[in-house]
Amino acid sequence: MSDKTPTRVKGLIEHRLKRMRDHGMKPDYRADETDVPVNQTINCGWGRLLFGNTFAEPDDLVTALRDEGPDRRDIAFYVRDPHVVVGLAPQELFLDPSHTFRLNLSTYRAAKDSRKGFTVRRMSSRSDAEQINALYASRGMVPVSEDFFWSELDPREITVLVAEEDETGDIVGTAMGVDHQRATGGAELGSSLWCLAVSPQARFPGIGEALVRRLAEVFQARGNPHMDLSVLHDNDHAIALYEKLGLERVPVFTVKSKNPINEALYAGPAMEENLNPYATLIVNEARRRGISAEIIDAEGGFFRLSYGGRSIRCRESLSEFTTAVAMSICDDKAATRRIVQSAGISVPDQMIVGQEDLGSFLDRHRSVVVKPARGEQGRGIAIGLTALDEVEAAIDTARTFSNEVLVEECVEGEDLRLVVIDYRVVAAAIRRPAEITGDGKSTVGDLIAAQSRRRAAATGGESRIIVDEEAHRCLVSAGMTLADVPPEGHRLAVRRTANLHTGGTIHDVTGETHHSLIEAAVRAARAIQIPVTGIDFMVKNPREPHYNFIEANERPGLANHEPQPTAERFIDFLFPLSMPKAVRDTMQRELP
Image 1 (spheres, one colour):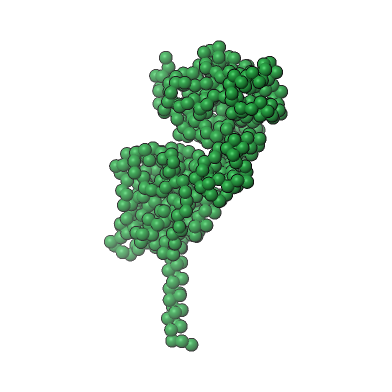
Image 2 (cartoon, rainbow, N blue to C red; image 1 turned 45 degrees about the vertical axis):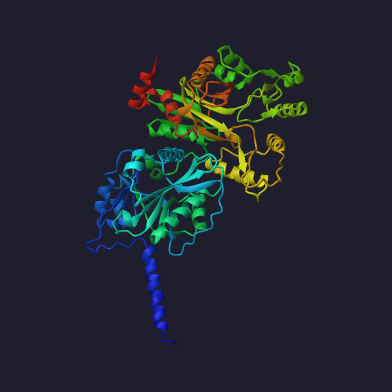
């Protein structure tokens, strides 16, 4: 046997012991070194990151967690003996149901950046900060004040990255990284990733992966030995991404405070797993206020809310306060048009099939819309038809949804949805049709399938691109088929309807919507006498006063309007006494 063998074996044993220490339950803490800082924390804007392995005594960590600020989410990471810490304050603390994954930066190899359509860079402006908070809101994350981003954040300790769409300049992704060595004065040597968020409206794949890789490269260049992250145990999509990138799960634990922000993490799974996102949003807001929620039919979205002496049945945002008459008006698009027109609302020209010559109507307007007189979620609607045979075929399709079919003047512009609650506009958003972006390799069919999967994942399965006759017409008008391969960077609309359920995206414009549009939406709601509704206008620009009324929805989806508090205002309307006093006072001041 070679003389070097014992040395080699010893080296292998030392390497294995070091790996066990690095990946063990108790990350290395040099408690015997008097010059190492103790009880280390860092303010990340959304809350503090507490380095649990720098706290020698569990009592000290419990005391630090009790100092959590209002509306903040503190996180104690690398907790030594988490069972002891939680046991000291079981009514206040809980063990976070997340896994910790680690990327070994000493062996990490950067991949060639082949992503197109967006750029990953550091946050650099107040506009970036605003859009980051909008992303946080869309993902139910804790917002960070702009003052923190600009005055308190130390870029040597915290790195904030954004993914910016090259064409639009929109921020569609963000991630925050913490350099532990710099944040703790050397008490902890690694790094970590937090607040990874990708916009549900993102058009390009690979944004999350690009943000993780860029942050890993930042910390690798600084010499940090590893980058850790925490992910909920049931977030299979994210876990698959991290494992693909080479991260390994390590037995590191996190402790958090039992506060309203964390309630979903420690209260256990909801009893009703089949509620759709629109009903879930409302039920969660009600329960947050102590309002009792009884699920009547989860699949249909029916529930009963009770508070004090009042009990109200709802189906998503449709409540008993909407009369049967108002609902029947919204259900009949021709009746809706007549009623709002009598209130001075601008409407496009329209005919009922069979009551006017179809050819003459088409000659007069050149481009038309065909839609069922009754129906929702964009079903059976065909837009931008210019040939009589197309119109007739679309009428046959629409008749499968309603016996009565409408043909309407096609008005160019963008689809603006205004959510009216208690005759106030609480949210305004531009809705855009589903589209794909070519990569020069994939077929139209494959790109649609991939984008549809992303939309479904971002909306809890509520938004998918449906390939039907309307989609085929849209492709044909662009000279494409499902088997064609669009050039790299080529944007292709695959539907003309902007409905969320058929793959459309929604973009908040509440703060920039012209007051004339807001007034018109309220006037339309009052004409129908419906207190909760989604009013759809076709507009050239939401900042301008010109519009055409399209329809009123008696059960508007309140989800996906972040950062606007749609569910909060709906519960305020149903139960005014549950409304926070500050909101009540503000609304009283707004009354004429």
